[in-house]
Length: 284
Image 1 (cartoon, rainbow, N blue to C red):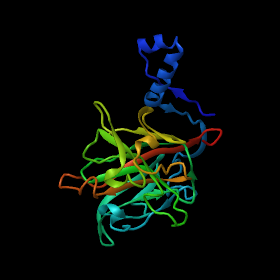
Image 2 (image 1 turned 30 degrees about the horizontal axis):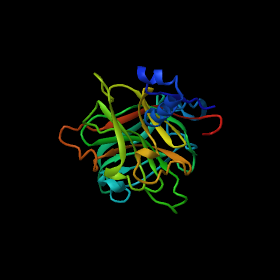
Image 3 (image 1 turned 45 degrees about the vertical axis):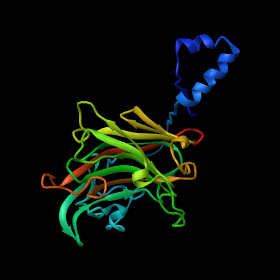
Image 4 (image 1 turned 120 degrees about the vertical axis):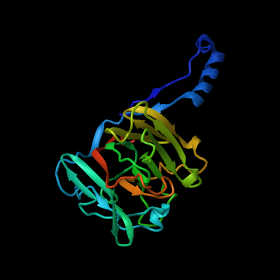
């Protein structure tokens, strides 16, 4: 069952006012602005520990292949493949490799894995332990997309939850974002998280969300750094509408990171130690 803890604003004056009926209404008002809901989901419902060498588990993962439309809508430069050159499991980790090579009209290749049609869930804790690549123009991500009802709905109406995005020339910073109708692309709702005296590309870190009705909490290494609720978005809250699926990818170039430069070294790899999804006993 979900555990909820309320972090409340406290002052000496407020505590004194609790003694009176009038102060009750004052403190209730403070809860609206200063309370953060934290949920703990403990029932494991999906896990890939990447313990079998070779291609990723086909019962969990499928692929996007090609360049998408307009570089997947972001002017990205890579051609996504399912070749072992770009995606494989070795020694207990998933390896997604971005390469600089001529391939079917593109100058780079990489891989984009997704659980669409294989594993989708509404709400829960979604987390992955990842080491990201380094270099200008690299754009790895761990994210969720809403089910599109077999094409009947389109982005951003379907919703997007970016659990981890990172640009390779800023190795101490990552960010988590939501996209929906009226708040997508450059107008998305986002917050960054900075490591102090460390970098994301030199070791593994756990990136996660805990997602429930009307809230999404963002974590790095179990540090809660942001909560997004319907009050934070300027349009429709589309994150109570149905299941989302998982995507892992490494993009090259595009609107966000810019293109690689002369100092970018290829190949670059994103290593994923595990992906785990939990729910609470009431699936909320």
